[in-house]
Image (cartoon, rainbow over all chains, first blue to last red; front, side):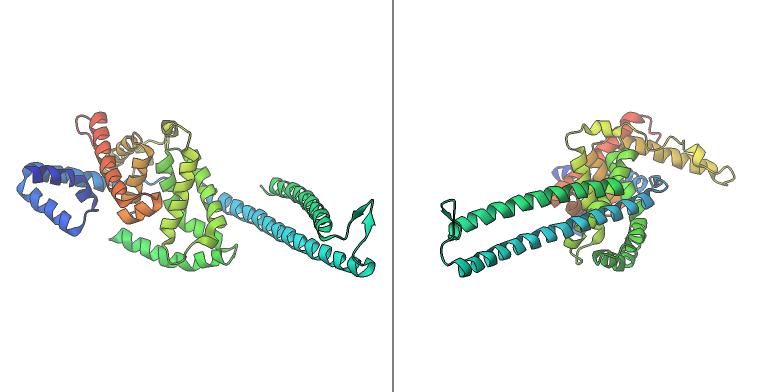
Length: 158
Length: 199
């Protein structure tokens, strides 16, 4: 009786064809001996058959074309964004290198000290702090400009 | 068997196109989207129960595929990967919405009879079969989205439990119990709607 109950619960899965080979055989063997389960299995099989024959929806006209166009437009936007990001990284690297080079040249020209308003601008910490502020300010301005450009590009394409 | 063979053939046919997409060839998109249009749209329609949502998700899925194709592992089955992308987008879209509200719009206003050709010799059989299928579709719409999804993936896409588990990102045991509950729920819905056994 306990076996009957547990196998009866497997009937929908057996009809759906998702049980393992051994479990499937157990269910089918039991269904041959039990009228109730045989009838149940037939009902589930009929339902599974109907589920495989449902009417197929028609894909709306132009959906494929609209999707293709949208994908390519989004791809253009993504590529532009990627190039701009690369450009920003290159600019940041360039500014870091040029800042260090300028610092080195000024050190060669003026020796270890160049005082402006009482601050030694050629000390490593002052130079680093000043150039970092300048690089960040420039990067922020560039990011805003690129963001605007992306928005315009997206508006124009989409 | 036939469905499995057709799916394998489709996969073989699609593989070079997927490779072209990965390489960034824009001409490959048309062919890949066309090949998957029926299956993907059908899945999204069954999942959302709403043609407008299905169309929107269809477009979003391909945009996401374009964004993530670089991370797609060519050793994995593309079909399963594509459906999992669609699944995740649908989950995001439905999150915070009432699932029932997705079921509002009918799939088609056309009656079964209208779709029949009058000159067909077995028109009555077709009509009966068509009405039976339409009734079953109506019952499916009563089910929760996760149950509609598992039924569509198993019976229309012919996916195995393992593949469904990968698409829905859930354990195998969850898919098994979900499928069982979906079938039980569908049978209950059929019995409630058609107590005299019309379908």
